[in-house]
Length: 331
Image 1: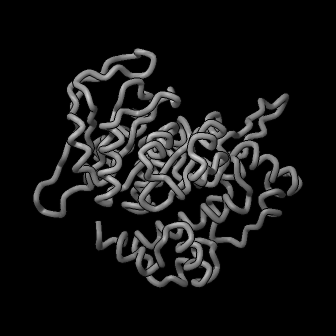
Image 2: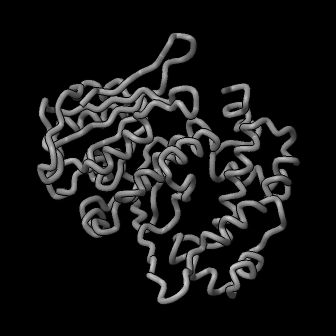
C-alpha cells in the first residue's frame, strides 16, 4: 500500500499532515474511514486538504483477525511529524499497546499535535496517559471496561464523538466518519465538509452529542422515515419553523415526532433544526453573504446575537473570526 500523498506546490503554506498509526490487529474499517476523509484527492473541491500517510511499528502488520497484511508504509518515526495523529484502534482492548506506540502518542501530544482516536482508539490514548481528566468516548460495548481501567477519564459513552480541543474521540464504526467530517469542518469550514460528505454519500452533519445506539424499527405497514419532513424543512430554514410545524407537516403529534427523531436520528427535533440552521449560516458566511444580520435572517437563526452564541458554542469562533478563517477570500 502506498504511504500517502502530498501536493504542496510551494505556492502556499504546507498542507496539514495527518498520520495514521496502524498496529497489529487494527480495524480495517476505521482505517478506511481515515483514508476516505483525509487521504483521497479532492477534484470536486479543486485543491488538496491534507497530506496523508500511514505508519506502523513493523514492516508487516497483520490486520484484525488476519483479514490482510499491511506492508509498504512508513515506519513509526513518521508519527513525529504529524499535525494530526490518528492512533491505533484494536478490538483486543485488554492487550497492552506497544510501548513504542504509546511513546509516539506521548511525543505527539507533548509537541502540540492533535490526537484522534476512533472506536477503541480511546484505550490507546488513555493508556498513553494523555486522557487523564479529559473528556472522551468509545464504543458503548466497552464503556464498563474503560471506566474500570481509566477512572480518571471523563467518559461519555452515549455520544457519537467528543471534541475536547486537541484530543478527539469517536465511537465505533460509522461514527469515525462523523468525527472525520467534523475535523474537516473545523479545519476548512462547512462548505468544504459538505462537499466531502457528498463524495462519501454520507450525512454532512450529525452532531457529536447524538446517541451512539439508535433504534431503527422496521415499519409494520407504512414507511415511517423522517426523510420527507427533513427535506421539506431544509428547503425552508429561513422560515419561522417550529417543532409543531414539523409535526404538522409529518402528520404526527409533537410527542410522536420527538420519539421518531430519537429513534431514527438520536437527537431531538429542535436540536436537529438548530444544527441545520447553523450549518447553513456557516455556509452563507463562507460564500461571502454580507452582514451577519442577513446571515442570521437567511439561516433562520433570527438575530446576530443568537448567531454569535451558537457559532461560539459549536465552532469555537465568532462570526467575524469564522469569516476571516473560512470566507471566500481564503479559498
